[in-house]
Length: 275
Image (tube, rainbow, N blue to C red; front, side):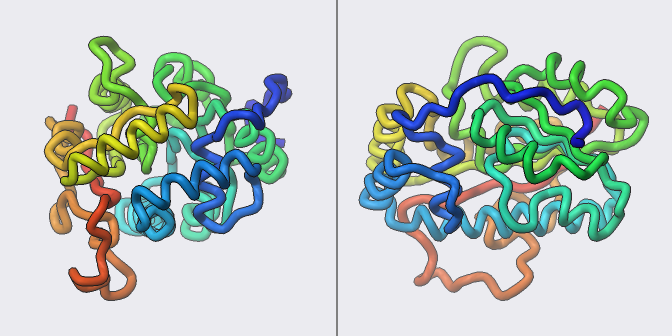
């Protein structure tokens, strides 16, 4: 049984597209419904590279976890907005390097929670937390003694901040990152990437489509300089710096410019938290 497992109580709403299920469809998974597929097809008409980006983003996540576990000796990972389980989940990558690595997955999508707890129930070094990723204090309280707070933690915000709207309070994505960074132990790392576009039409049209489709459970496609601000006060791993995720320590030669998306990209990087 996964550490801290709780019974699933909220029903799965199949009348509204779910970002997690849409992402699963784009990755070639099977945990989605017609409403999710229709929303993805609408999205692909606006931004044709969306499926390519989803797969590049997943590969980035695998590389990040592998490098942090192998080269930086990180053994604790806090995955915000983890999404539906797929191949090479965070714990699988990390535990291939250190079998004692611990991963806490955070998500509030009932389908994610149901499948996550079913597939991960035999690993004592995994915890599945039913919380909105913005509930930092509640998440830390649930983690409790699962993590050793004297040792570094890698906090992952991989392709999730665009799901959060800008606000003037602690729910703002920037405020969330600052709050999590403050709570992390010395030597910890922050991993952040999100969808960005330099095309204002793409930013506006995708944001409107996703906001309408998910009934307001969406944030905003942003610009690169806005994502840069999330890393203020941290020591960015440079090289490679903040980049299109296909350029972050790629396993193979990244695509040439003429084969890259021109509508939007996943953009971000990794930084060490300063205290």
